[in-house]
View 1 (cartoon, chains in turn brown, cyan):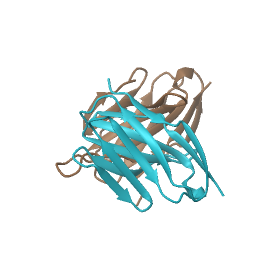
View 2: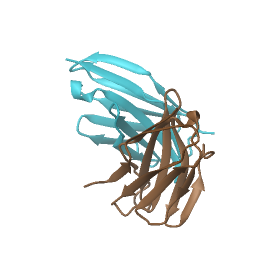
View 3: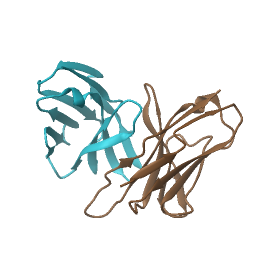
Length: 115
Length: 111
């Protein structure tokens, strides 16, 4: 089982460059999330999606955009990267039903450095 | 705003010890609480999920309890092994967009 797959795993950018992180899940989950993890800050929610074609802002959305054109994919974009966006980014997915209140499955992470 | 605190921040024990990790939260109106394990450079792996109506969940040597009224959860690890060394995070869920993580307890089990 692939579960949640993130690409790329590592990337170095210069300030002002743009890039897209891809998250793919094969569990037919409706809900997908992008988090960033920073030392001393824990995990913070950037954006999330409750289904194909829908996205919403999380706790720290500034400087990021997202798209969910297909149910299985959730893309995180940085239009103009800043050093403050140096972080480890995690994608997660889940299914919410009356019987299952949201066990989260995470990808392996994407480590981004902005110089 | 929900705040989640994990104590201790780091813990070092010899192999074979039973140990308890603590998680406290400020708002008791939750749907569930999850415990995760994170190995260095890796993603989070779900260990146990406790629904708000449940008191505890068990998986192998792990047992997690939940006391909503006091805003506390504990993760009990029996007969610890070096392979248990990792960071353990708890996360409290109030809805599909409101999952709040603690900063984790870094556990080192020495042979």
